[in-house]
Image (cartoon, rainbow, N blue to C red; front, top):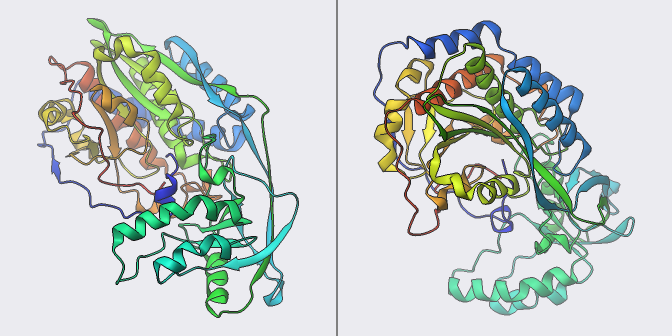
Length: 477
């Protein structure tokens, strides 16, 4: 899943999800869907593929050699499964980035070491740099406007926005905060942001967007424990001084990135397309098992079963393994641009990017007009647990760029609380957290849903929204 915007990193609230309505249940599936689920149960390669992707290829930052290896491996696998039109589609990404040395320690208070990780593609320090920690809590507009001068040469400790005092108009406060931000960032030695995880787990976010404020300012996400230590010390009104060293390298020129595409051609309506999508890129603190190795290998396994059983979908089923998702949906945006002429022929886009846990259904992105046909298409998947069709809108993955074009693009619905709190974007996103039975169910659910959509008599409606879709839930990026 992709990173938060700076506003979200610094503390926007999460809005409650929209109403979920269960699809009508039916008897256990027979026919092709039963063939597919039995094939996956008996012969699944998903776990073996996930172990290889995680342990042998490893982390897969967009622009890295590891991602190129993963893409070549995936294309070889898909060709072996019988896919046609297997190819890479290139797009301009931006500079590549490699994480370098990170170290931080207190110079006061017993020299305690601090745990953290650099902001991806962010500014570096000229070797170890020293400065005081600043924990501002402005209580008036005057104090807020004085922050840039107060911050000079210091490290800002930041977990959220500065809250507006009760006696200050929130609108005036927000305007003043926006006004001081540029000078504040210019004067700081660096920014220290709290990770959203516990037990020493770190957080990786960032991307090649040169306009991002944290590209010009050394910034790091500290473990919750290290952050809270600094916060407690700063709250004592004592001098708190640290030493910080952030290194990393970027390529001198922009690089091309690629999406991987493979197809099982339809028999009756081959020009109409169902996309089975997942992102092959990952962050680099762990090995990208749950974000999004599980999605990739479940999609590949669904495709393998469809090909192995020699079922004949009416419409084309197209696997798309996106890249650049973690830095801002670069790959899916590039796909939408490159395939603009055929978007109207896309029956649906199904994206799996929500970690471990069974697929319970699909977030329909507010598309009430698609619910009846999606219920029909997923009916044979009900006994697999695929029963929920929610109108919830979530914009944190590769389905999002399709929505403004009117393409029915849906996100796998799961209970992903554990994934967000534990493995997501952290150093423990490793194969140890794979859940074989849930990976199996994911592949079965994807195969059944894709089959149902490929063989519907009807087309799902394509309607361009009057306004840009707005998310009603955040998945913790």
